[in-house]
Length: 248
Image 1 (cartoon, helix red, strand yellow):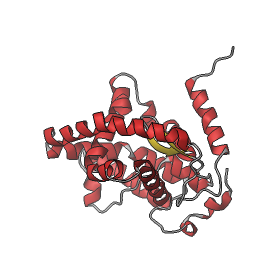
Image 2: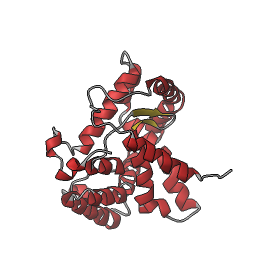
Image 3: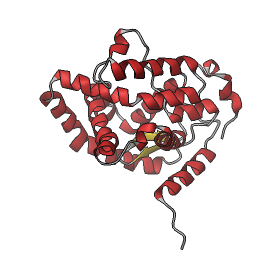
């Protein structure tokens, strides 16, 4: 029997997922045909947050000095810049590409490889772009909403975008050993804890204080992604013409 590598399986899933994207998908109701699977996965993710992520983030808040937490956040943001640079270019957004290139140059030199953030003090805007947003600008529909076990909320388009970000980000190919460890699971874990610490109250409200945390998380995620794709604009007409190139 022919065997396929994990990468090939992921690529095949992405093709099927994007093929299922629907042009009628809306932020208001979400296209959520897999809710019967999503809800158990949401319960799992909520349990992991309750038992692991939330307590660790609170310990991080109490045990780590504010200066260190500030530097950690600076580094995480700096490490996201190469991906933002490439995706801004792929989206044809010259302004955001230039801003991000300038931030890499300034914070990579004057900022000590991202430990400090002099670019912000110099008034250079900070942006966040990923391949899921790039696919949307290219015309890919959102597709079904998914809540993935241990990975959280996503959609067909954003899942494919996650794979695309790994492929196009030069940091994915940085050395072996300590370098890959730092830029791999450890970086991801630190990012989760840092984000949970910084947005703890909002996450608690969504997960523990809403009547249906699944619906709350889903709607917040879809609204946030829609806003990111529109770059803070209020309507689809504000997107570049390339958005009208058709749906997958």
